[in-house]
Length: 168
Image 1 (cartoon, rainbow, N blue to C red):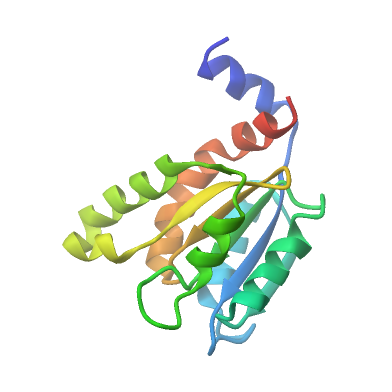
Image 2: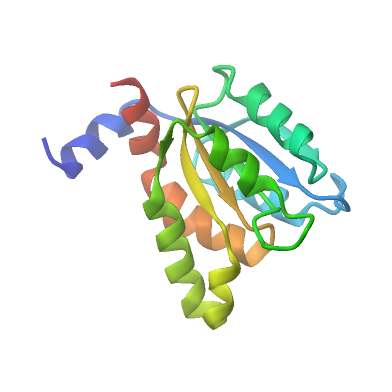
């Protein structure tokens, strides 16, 4: 069975439930443009947002959100923010240690696409993805541009396939 067959079977499952976590020391629900953008893009594509949180870039808070949204409600979990190299950027460190299976291609493709837009600065991104507790977890930079690239070009084209692979 090839990828087109997998996509066909995956599409028969319908909408995919997912959760969104924004990692930021400054954003509020009113100012969280990236979280709102993720919600809009996935809902416009026919999927269901089953949870949303803003957490500070503190390892304990990131880990608590990871645990909360990998309880079976969501098949996908999208973190945005905290993937850079500044002292406060800790999302990658928490997520990468927890992943049971990694999807290195996500980070590689994200940085490739980002390079086309921002040049060499793309290497500063520690975007990552993998599986934790039967949930596909993505961690993207927090800028609206980065979120749009990750969701539109990488996550949405494979969202049903990713969710189906978890249960087949």
